[in-house]
Length: 359
Image (cartoon, rainbow, N blue to C red):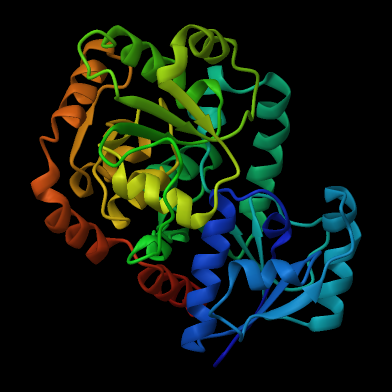
């Protein structure tokens, strides 16, 4: 095989921005720019390619007509594979029913098996079977961290040597333009970027911030960026009690998100479980200060941020907020950013993917 053709299921690119979108766009944007493979991206809307691949014109659009996942995986991708005859077809988590080409599957995490208390029973049962079958049938299995690699090996019985790590990377935040958000002042707020669900632990950050209300300057704010993904009564209650010093933002542009990362006193990420934790290093890439909980896959990110803490310990969370408000780590911005950039890049992950395809 010289230059393979890869057909990618890019249906997520048509929806709300999420980590899987950034993964597909970052990985295949780099591969297309380098000319390592012919990239066929299947999406419902052609404008999704312009949105996610603004500087990778070599990515080719393949129209995707099915909005239903069963129709997409049950029939349409079988038809697309027969028509385009790719060397590989790449899917996230779940592969189609019929196999006409070699398959790549990325299993970003198995948190529903490692931390089942955060996921509904039906989700756990259904996806355990689907993800396992897809991984066993795939020719190439990818994931985004050593933590997730170990989980796939442990839960699915797949030899670790068959699982390849393609790290997420925050390339699009380096030197990105930013746009100020009205009502916020540089250095006078902390930010947490993630969708709202119990394992993300936003309520603990709101509570810790409330506990310090009398101690912190009156102008200091907590900003939560995201949208509800699962029922989260503890966060609903925390926000009701949080007062006007807690702000919730959603549907931000990339420039606005960059500004938040760059101008926050710190990004604080107290999640209880992550398969990677992309916002943790996005903040560093944007030139900001970043602290994260030291658990699951985030343990691998600790050397590339400004500090870590036990997200289940309210005292450590309060101390981290104090540290951010005091500006204790502002002098380490450049050094930390450079160290992180040397490790996490789409160029490195693209190289890892191509190596796996040629193995």
